Image 1 (tube, rainbow, N blue to C red):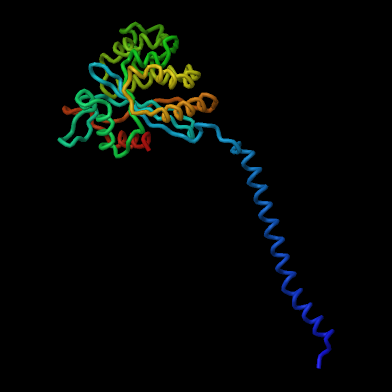
Image 2 (cartoon, rainbow, N blue to C red):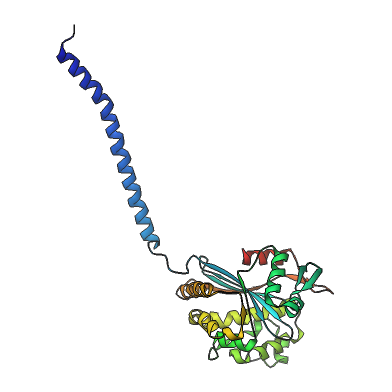
Length: 286
């Protein structure tokens, strides 16, 4: 018969055989977890993610309509994560799908307003803008800022002979204000096709904000002040978040303000978007 002392030491040995590896494993896992937490905290501090700026993660996609006898359109993408503002020219005669067949954006706008134009553009492209915003050129001038100036290089949109004929041979980069922009655009677009004319407006609006980035912090509040003269589906909450994103972008040295145009071809019925134009529209609206 075994002694009681032998049984005790045998039991103690077996207990330690189980507990020691288990305790070591627990201590190891705890240490690993603490180390991982320290690494993640250090990485977040290095990226500046501890406090994310308001507007840094938001993106807005707007259909802008310019109310004239022949309405014009722009897609505006304000992209906080990509730190980019993009103006995209959309010809007024762009063909869009309607229940009764194809029509143009400008005809749709004149018949049923900006909400219907935004809806048919959505049906055509397959993606919807977040909101529409429609105003007259004078109202847009107020939003951009009547005392804002910008120099526009006409050499970027026409050849030397055309510039000379319009009086921009020597001074090919006239200084513009929003008040004279419509007259300037009308002069330059006289012999342009639909794509070039739409691209021109996008380029001019782009230049105003590119050369005056501080206006990014002011345009949304200016739009609020002009609310009685605009048609929009933007809510008060939308405007607040859009304003935060604009303010965020204005403080980013790497922020980009650019312009583009929807590619297509002119047909007897209107401006038909090609594959490249459809892809660009989807990129801006995604």
